[in-house]
Length: 113
Image (tube, rainbow, N blue to C red; front, side):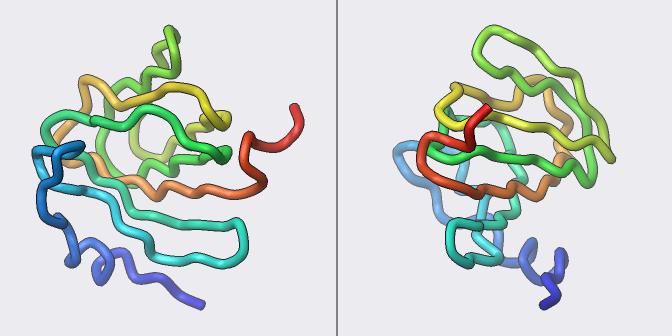
């Protein structure tokens, strides 16, 4: 199976919601079992908090800081970022060209450490 970045990106943004007043900038590109691959391209402010599954971000373009709880992780294009399930996190100080694949998998609560 092939997922086209351009095709998925062309479907964004989705309409604004109370939780995402700048518009919804993520969309699921693939789902299979516990696996979900989403394109995430935040604009304005990143309003997310935590997720039930472990998550990888594959940074395609852009740079910034990923805050996980109280830790700050600077990143740039080409980096892969891991966030354990149920950890509060969000992108901060990110460039307006930020594009990531967000990959969720595994059981609720995450894999065993």
